[in-house]
Length: 237
Ligand SMILES: Cc1ncc(COP(=O)(O)O)c(C=O)c1O
Image (cartoon, rainbow, N blue to C red; front, side, top):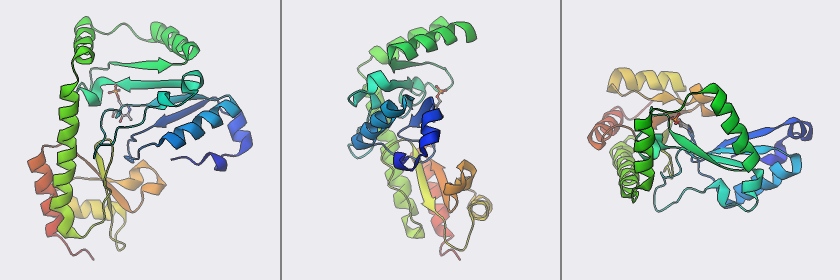
């Protein structure tokens, strides 16, 4: 998460928009209430609008309920939070979501939207309304499926000795690459020798070097198979 004390004051003064996303894609980091409090204070001080992308807001593991930015005191005045039905309701590609928060920002979005896009096809709007009016048990079931996949994948991978993250939100798991490899070489090894495709961390930025990202978007049996195949290549040198 960003450390606001490290932001140069002139950059903070010039900034208009602070874009955040927790649980995060790609890192899977989750926000804390303290971090959002600091965010509101920082945004107020420098008159910055906060836009929190809460796409993974329903996907929290081990009893963790992802933090909504709007729960933070002062957040509704400071910015907006937006949500998509892509992840929570498996409606990826349907392009339906909503934004909530500061009225003037919502008004601006409304104006832009009116001029840049045509209304969504009515069938999708009806499906979106049905999804949101539902008792949300399907959302809880889906989250439980991702949690189970995470557990089964990590268990199958554990004999490999590779260090992993115990993801608490979103559907990504990170592997620490053995010291002797860089991300691309290790990805190639897994692709060629285990036939498992992963995303090299440095593709997301320099701080991802040394790590690979795995998506939990395959059925459990495929993820177990992937974990076992990777583990069968150990020890890594
Ligand atoms: C953080 C984040 N925000 C937004 C989206 C996309 O949402 P939509 O499908 O509604 O464009 C994704 C999907 O990959 C995502 O990971």
